Image (cartoon, rainbow, N blue to C red; front, side, top):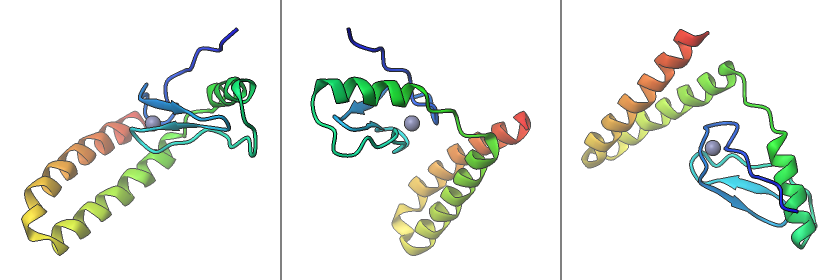
Length: 105
Ligand SMILES: [Zn+2]
């Protein structure tokens, strides 16, 4: 019997990759508990079960992660002038997400 894979506890994405020993989110790079050198279908099921028990990060951790991302975007915008418009758009998205998290505190 296969176990249903829950969405990413960090970002809610369902764009996930199940490995034999872990689950990874393509949207935020979050990963599941690493089961080590486990191989095969039983391990894949255990990976999914372990992934499904991951607790969402508290808002504070997400705020810190987004703040760090904003600093990275600022650095990119300074280093590569021709990417400035893309960086500005990314910053706007991240800023809105951060404001939403702050409002939920
Ligand atoms: Zn994710």
